[in-house]
Image 1 (cartoon, rainbow, N blue to C red):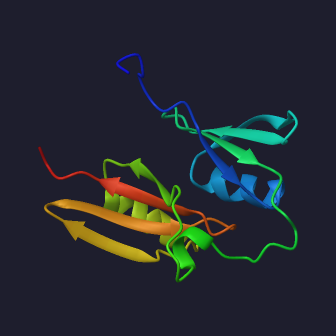
Image 2 (cartoon, one colour; image 1 turned 180 degrees about the horizontal axis):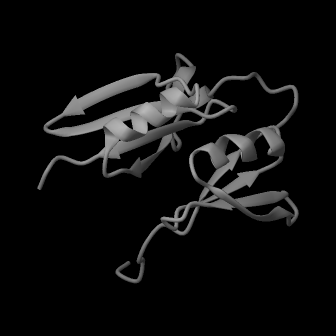
Length: 132
């Protein structure tokens, strides 16, 4: 389908709107609206145009883990969001200053990435492509 032009948004199921709003605000996301709709959903957006829908229907009794990333059985589904950055060293320093744990660092064929987890254990990758 050539009509697809970009990803419009990413939906992340979260437990607590206030906790998630604070976390994503530290990454530069601004609160737009919410909760709205039947789910309900709150929307945050980064100045780069990246939009995340925080879906506020996580079960309170669900385990505090990411079944797609931590279960021994590898279930199908989206495992992470990758945000492209221009300066991974700067991003890494900012994450460390904020007290956000970098869970993994990878370098592959000149590209570099770091991974973090949000308060609901959703995985976020910061990706600096190899020099072109």
